[in-house]
Image (tube, rainbow, N blue to C red; front, side, top):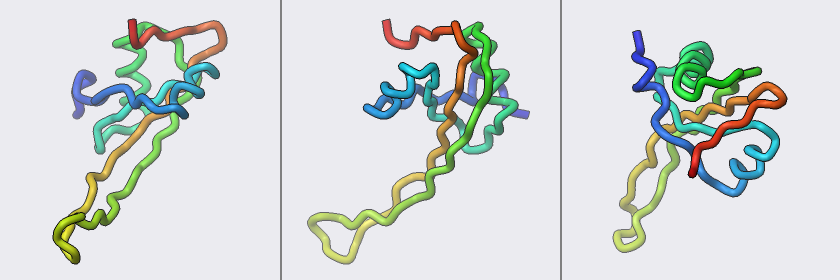
Length: 96
């Protein structure tokens, strides 16, 4: 069982997420074990808004070479994002 406070790790802030926010879609970085239902409950409880749907995106790790030591490097972390679509007329204020 996942606690609601451990599901949402942060707001993902990029140019594309700002564009989506204008359409009523907000992007969050979520826990790797989160599912759509747990994200739905956590966002609804924390922000007190009406949600239409939730989509999840898994970003797999990538190999990143080290700049100084050729041939050496490491992998980036796996990440999971949630795109939360609000019902029409609802708004969310994240940054004040």
